[in-house]
Length: 237
Image (cartoon, rainbow, N blue to C red):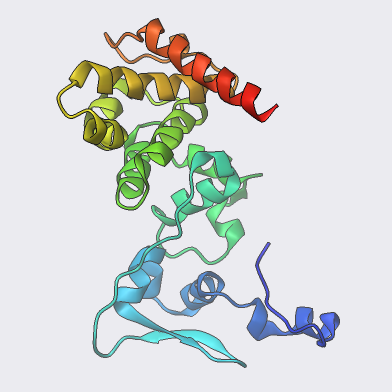
């Protein structure tokens, strides 16, 4: 399940047999951990702080950093991406894995999926991973994308305290509405709730199934939103 680049004139058999092309920064990290006691103590995201990646045509490998400094960053993923999200979650919490199967193993037993492994490691029992996911997304995603992510997390991860997450990230979730209507706090709140409600409905869920404490959805805003959506669909028809 890796992306491999090749030229149109290359023989695919040779491409698939090329060990250097199979090797990625992650799989080289796995290989490093088989013999390097120090890298075995690190999380994948900590590797660039201590090692340098050499991306040569015929060979790709990590070497211990002798000077300079770099920060590692895992490619973003959200729960709707399934196993890719749980793989990222495991890499963010497990030190020194030696293979993909190693990440899926508990006490010598290899589990069937990254999700199952994340659950058995206790990474899905608290809201910490969800909070971390939102905190990372806030840094580079627009408010509309954040609201979709928030709704996705409510459905796929079922946080224990969704109201805490709402309160912590509300400023980012509502930033575009707050900019458009700076003096209308109630309107900003309702527009944010309404948008999330519509996203939940598009995923087959209702707002009533989400526990956001004493926050109430003003149905007038929801009706207006649906009327606008209907008018748009009629225009395109």
